[in-house]
Length: 425
Image (cartoon, rainbow, N blue to C red; front, side, top):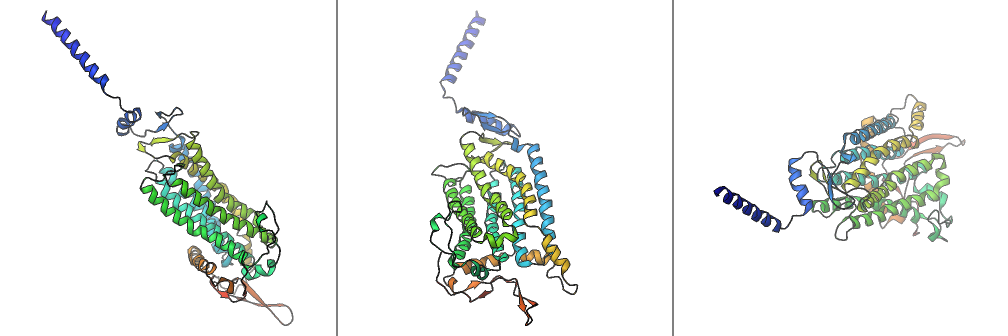
């Protein structure tokens, strides 16, 4: 009898316990899934499935295969480009041109290694935002150097104006000059081209700093077009700035394409434009794809919580690692060192080498010429003078034959009062 009473009592207690548990509100399934597992499971990845629920899954980006494959392309690109930079420094016979070329070539090591680091640290609290900020700042520097190299090829602003000044701008929707019908080339046109590229060199670092601050306060996520976040506004400003910069490059090329033809500018222009402009749109498309659910959004990667846009940024970095290998090959043909090597071999034996490798590299990484050029182009007194080329000037002899060459100062800041005009573009 006592046994039956004890049994009935246990059943009653069990029923009361089950009833009380069923009356408690069930916690959110996502937090129930995440909280215990993050602390107890290592190397776990959680993504949002197509029906909106979190599931444990693997993504290719944080696998050893992805890191190894991207690393092979990155280190191959580094070897190709570093050898090319070294070859230019060994044959540093035209520093006023090669300075810009070497700066342009550095885009491959910076882009490739930065993207690879971002991929390796994909799960570490969105460190990729800080890495990518460094990479993005350098692309503005590259656009400026490409335009400056084109100016140097043609002998400087005065030499360019001697060829194109007064000519009518051809109206063409293809070349983006349909709104410039009836206008002619002037010193203001060259000033606009320089200012449009230099503004990107200013805007991009400012946007990078703002991005880092927004990231620190949780207000920036790739692909998050919410009006309360910073990604939307950063993207709009960046898109306007880079488009204006590349438009200026395109205008300058259309105006001087005949003059630049001996320097084979098409491959140079297309390579630079592809690396910078297409990579921007590539990143934006990937961010939109993640936002639309085509690319799965990750909540946890390797047991670390990550923010929205991390997977899209990871794919962007992975693709960039591969693209830089092909960019290195394209730049090797676009900015060949053979012409400078040949010039070095033709130099007389009694001519001392212009620079050692270390001093040439030091001159290359010094951005002082860009700062001085920015002051020059944004100065109110710009129209009172124009920037002269620093190439060699050959003095004619009385008999009509070329005489000894006189080398101007290698400083890009040298100016000559040459054009006094109020022409504006």
